[in-house]
Structures are given as structure tokens and as C-alpha cells.
Image (cartoon, rainbow, N blue to C red; front, side):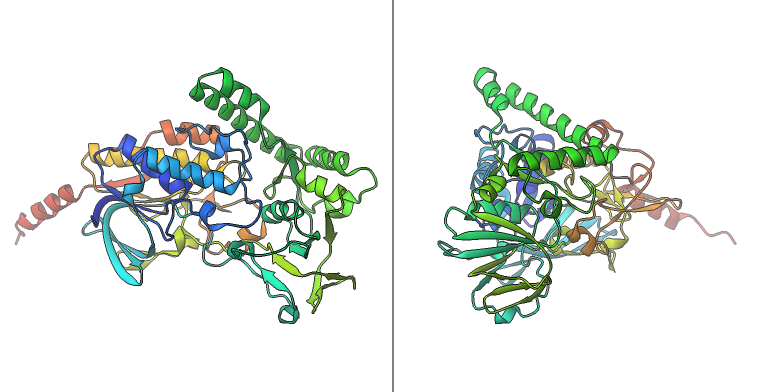
Length: 498
């Protein structure tokens, strides 16, 4: 194992494998390794095993820019996505750089050596790496523990309680009454997926989420895939999908009432005029103040119309022996309760960072171009879009990191650090009201109202800035250890006047 590297990457999911590809393509003479906490490639798509697990973005934008998605379904299931990531790792020689079962515990920067020392744990034993640059591709949520509120009386329930992040391998729900607590993407995926075997599935939500239905297969994309060269068809479809995502997001923010009316109208068309969409499908917030839930091929609405699933909007008073008693006094009986209650967020895979012995408090950092951080040298992380596919931004960030690495190499520089000026107006890093972001607001970095410290959530803007913008912009501070040592040595030789 080579423990001294040019670049060390944390995480071997979509982002980490993509980062490996861009390093091999754009920085072929640089050494790198990927440390993966789990024993397999895929991260999210290897971790989650619940029924129906799938993407909530189309694979033409969730897939890599450099590797066309060739499957028929644009909204892909988890195993297909995991297979795609593994194929990428093998096709481009990334797997040989991955060290599995390596949990990064701590990373310490030394300005004296211009190196990161990374402390990891491998099968209970400490392992140390030294690297010139550190890139976190570990996502933003805790893989070990999902979010679980304290439910009064949970210990009284005689059935089984399951969190989707820790799905039992052989959970038998055939003929069982199932309650899924939650209204986010996981719940909306689980409910229709379980109806084929369960006796009935009830989605119990405190408040509704906006939902939008799309075909699981994109007919135009599949037609182009048959009649055009693969790369041309893929790029054209990707461009179309990106344009629509950005248009729809801007429209929702500019005309929220109009967008709300249209989204709810589509649901009424599916469920009929007699269904109480006002109670069960009308959120308290405007569209795109939280992420929309994708319903492929109307599967959720079909399950409701067929009587296989139902939605209950209420709050939980207590768990009972037979199920859940609601604030309204009604009791829902169940054999299995699934707590699709969300994620616990963490930064940089949970690793502690320090710079010259001073611990980094992530909630006090400011994000430079959404990927580097104020006063933290030679470090970047991948944080995808909240209003579009994660990989769109991951691709751009990885390419930008390679540009920075080549700039350092070409000008014989050792250190790059974003420096924030004194005049700035703070904003939250993520402009979303989702519970998991609100719970983690103290550990999330900040942004400001001005570039390059502003998060635009715009692929077109980031494309120009990250791929083509100037590296040296007056905000990044560069240092050369050799030049610094030369200056220090020359100062030592200057005679002291009497």
C-alpha cells in the first residue's frame, strides 16, 4: 500500500469513482487513493436495500458526463445504479486505487510540510496516509445511523419496527399490514413497491410533500439511442434534461402559486375529483422550497386508486401494542412499522479536520465555489445540487479540482487556500426548509450573497465558472514552500545593524 500520495479521496460512491476518472484523465502523473468505509463500491446504492430503491433523478443527469447511461429506464433501480458505478470503476481502472473498509477518522494539515496526514481505521487497526491534497466525496449524511425521532410508546408495539437505512435482509411483509411513517422520497418509493406483497400499506405523514410523476422510460431518449451514435444521443438527452430541470426550478421560484396549481392539478387528474388532495397532497410550503418527490409511472397514485395503499395525514400521539394512536384519536393497526423519517447529516464523512493543530468547526466555514472552504488549505469536497441531479455538479467540481492541481503543479506551488474578505453577508449553505437540513444547520458551512462565496444552484453558471473560470481570482492564496524557505534563509543572512 502506497501511503504517501498526491491526492487522497474519501468515498467510493458516484462522486469518488468520478473523481478517480478525472484524476486519471486530467492529472495522469499524480498518485491517488480512494478510502471507502464499506466493503463495496457504490456508497448510497450499496447501503440502501429497501424494496423499490431507485433514483429520484433521471440517469441521463445522475449518470456521468463521460459514460453514457444505456439502460432503457431513465428512472433506475438501486441495483442498476450500483452496477453502473462498478462498471465505471472497472472500465477506467479506478478499482485498483480503492482501499475498502477504511474509515477516515481524522485529517490534519501541516503548513510546515504542506501535507495532510490522514488517520483511518482498517479492520480495527489504525492506518496512516500522507497526501498533498484531500478531496472528500463522502456525501453529506451519516451512513451508520439514520434519523429516528423519539416515538412515545414505541417499546409497546408488538410488531416489527424498521428504519429503511437498516433494512433487514429477509424481512417478510407478505400479507402484513404496513405503516410507513414519512412523506419524503423514501416513503414515496416504499409504499407502491410493497403493495404487491403486503396486505395493505399506509403512508402516515405529518404534512404532505410535492410530488411529480414522470415516465420511468424516456421514449425520446430511447429512440435517439437507437438511431444516433451513443455519445451524441446521450449528450443531447442530457442537455435537454438539464435545461428542463433548470427551467422548472426557476419557474417554481418565480411563480410559486402557478406551479403549485399545476402540480396539484396533475395529482387530481390521477386520483379523481373526490379524493381529498387538499389534506393529503397540498404542502404548507411553496414548490422547490424542499425537493420534489418523483413518482415514476404514477405508481403511488395507482396503488391508492387500487385500494392497495392509503395516505393518512395526522400526528402521532403514541405507539400502541397494535400500531399507532393518532392525535385525532384514531388508531392505525399494523404488523410492521417503517420509520422513513429521514437522514442524519454530517460533513466530510464524519472525519475531524484540523489545520496546524486547530480543530475545524464546519459550521463556521464559508464555501468557496461550493467546493473549497475558507482558511482550509488543499482541501475540497463534492456537494451536488439540491435542485437537480447530484452528479451534474460532482462532475464539474472534480474537473475544477484537477484544474487547481495542475495549476499548482505548473507553477511549482504547494498550497492553495481560499481567503474570505472582511465584508460579507451570511446566508445558509442550503436554501431549503427540509427537516434534515434544518437539523444540521449548525454543522453546515455558510455562503454569502456575493461570488465566489455564493451557491447559485445553476448548472450553466457553474459550468462556466468551474470549467472555464480563472483559477487565480484574488481570493485563492497560493504558496510555494521552496520560495518561502529561500526567503526565510535570505532573511537569516541579513546582518543586524548596530
